[in-house]
Length: 355
Image (cartoon, rainbow, N blue to C red; front, top):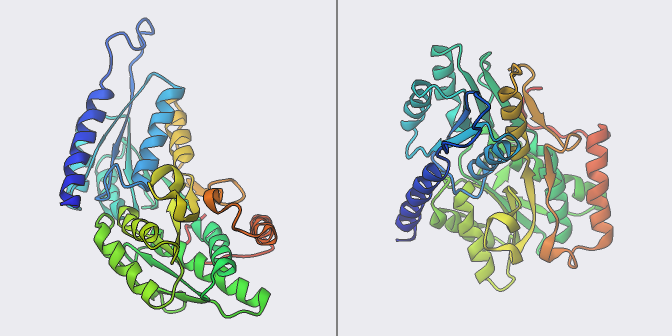
């Protein structure tokens, strides 16, 4: 029932957004200029995934705030078969900038862009390698490394866990960084904190195979908790809300590290969130759309790669955990950021974006 309600609610949100963003007759009156249209296609996670779709839409909204000659709209994909249909639909509507969200949309975007070489596309979390697609990628292994170190330092059971939605690069990159951060802590402190749910060496681990079903997220994290994990990082979009809700109901048995968007701003479960591995999608999308609307040609190479050094990735404030995280651990996590940004610590992942 909850899922059905969420889908229905999502439909209402979509309708409201579409109506709310309709151009007004007097908007930009007198400038005689044509509106610049930026149109977004979500992946199956939907607009309200509290994750990368939500973030990308925020970026479009921020671009519109900065330049009121920009019109924005989106369509939510219900199935992977919708991706190419929705992208082509926006080509036919003559959208100036078409944004695809998520690594799952890479193939469909490449196909649509190749078929329409004069159309400007953008994509979050993929790089199809086509001249008219501007890729926005994020080296979340770097911030994930900080989160893994933090989790290892905060764990009381000596076991921490992570799981993903699907075994795809934009997901496993977080998990690789997290595992390496734990390993770095163990080496520095001569400890043996275990990572459950992901083995970086074999690239095998726990997955929900879905980015929206909260019961699947709960099921996977329940299994990790049963094995002793007291801190869990879901990398599964809306499915991870099953974990945050379970953590809040557990009366402190386990806590959560969120991903993509600061969980205290995007979920109802802030009290159980230690921090978030943030992917600064809003700023990347906003900057790309503003540049394109201003007449600048977006270069597919190098595109944009978010790092700790350029603030494209980060970890969020500790919020309710601020008084619980020891000052020396906070300082060590901050030093890791500086060391990674300076190149003193090198973070690697098979899923890292090409620069």
